[in-house]
Amino acid sequence: MAQFFQQVVSGLASGAIYAALALALVLIHRATGVINFAQGEMAMFSTYIAWTLTANHGWSYWPAFAATIVLSFIGGLAVQRTVIRPIERAPILTIVIVTIGLVLIFNGLAGWIWSAEVRAFPSAFPNETILVGGVAISVQDLGTIGVVLALVLALWAFFQFTKVGLAMRASALNPDASRLVGVRVGWMLGIGWGLAAALGAVAGMLAAPTVFLDPTMMQALLIYAFAAAVLGGIDSPFGAVAGGLMLGVGLNLLGSYIDFVGADLRLPAALLIILVVLLVKPEGLFGKPVARRV
Amino acid sequence: MALLELHDVEARYGPVRALGGVSLEVGEGEIVAVLGANGAGKTTTLRAISGTVRRTGRILLGGTNLARRGPETVARLGVAHVPEGRGTFAELTVEENLRLGGYTRRGSLDDDVRRMGEWFPWIEARRDQHAGTLSGGEQQMLALARALMSRPKLLLLDEPSLGLAPLVTREIFRIVRELNERDGLAVLVVEQNAAIALDVAQRAYVLEVGEVAVSGPSDDLARNESVRRSYLGY
Image 1: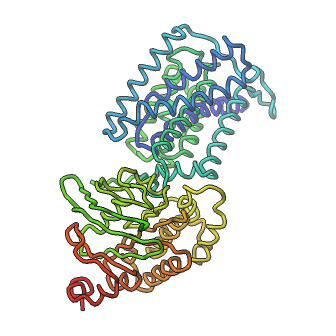
Image 2: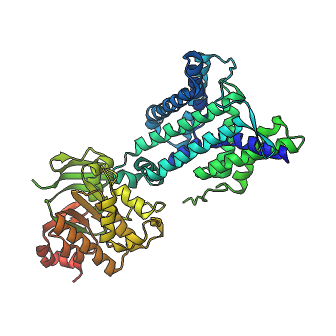
Image 3: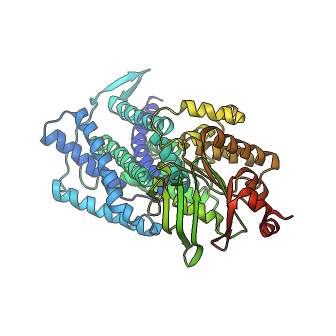
């Protein structure tokens, strides 16, 4: 039983990271109907910035964490304004292909600037365990879950209680009506990209201590984030978080209790979830079915 | 100088010309109606002003040319457009719809939200309800209230009576008239129902295939034989 709880907590920790990245995907998809395939590589790039600040410039962890979030926000906004905006009226396929181009650009840039060498990344939390009712729980896992939950709450409050948050929701629901009340919809999309990049940065920084830092570090994570977003419903922020946590716990339990599902089968399991959800319940667990006019 | 002046405004939807050189004026504190048959260009006239259709010509609001501005900027300059089909945000609550209406303003909107509750008493009880759950009349009133939240200089009303019970229509026009008399709100209203529009407006323009056919004080138009036969039906 103790082992079961340990697996659940560590599953929640990896699930929290999937959730953060899935939420980033959902933010952009809700606003524009586009999947940003570069979300993972942007997060990897952000993580390198955090690494540079701590390893090369001697920053301590939390200031570097905060600065990376701010820089990533600005970077995401800049990518939307310079790369995405000129093609925002183009067919979805065009935009998707441009985001795949961004994958290659960020990946190449990171390799060029920082080399493909695998590096250690510091963790904010001590590598210790605490005993909760006889179960040893990793402090790192608890910290990861806590950071993501705090972030999700802050984001929810931003969307629910601020003027810009309301305008962003309105822009996603009905851009034309939003323009009529004076909302600069283009900038709202830019802010959405900024927030998504910031979320991705957090996912990257939380994942890097365990997956290590290199230019491919986010590629598998992006697949898990896709699975989480599809499972929860690609347009549901709540679904992305719930989907991420469920996926993290589910994969972990699968790995520990079913012999033939080892680390090797985690990714195929995630892909299987994407496939099954899209076939059986395309709107996901928490999404609304989309009626399409033909 | 009038508050709003249109000089030779043309607009097209792709190859189709919807407006062929419309000129009209709305004075400070004036209610002006635009009448005409379906497809005459009434809605397009409002859309040309608010910037939701491509247009050429000159559209002056207090001397500023709007013709090259997008809808966000026109809204920021003090024009509130209540579009046909209302354009409320169905998935947002009544209060959120109202707060969006005041998006371009600085400072707290609490007083204005409260004032809308006084104008439209049902709003108070349904503040947290999604706009999509309201009746057609309530949605039309919410769209009007949302437009008023921006404290506009000029209100553009597109077919406020469309699909509504006569009682609701009368209530909407009563509020518009009251705002006009009390606060000097200028209104440009497009209507199918010419009788009610001529009743509330001081002046009116009749559009035919994208051009102004007749214009003048509402009383004169109401007496005009051809206008009466074509648009008033008696």
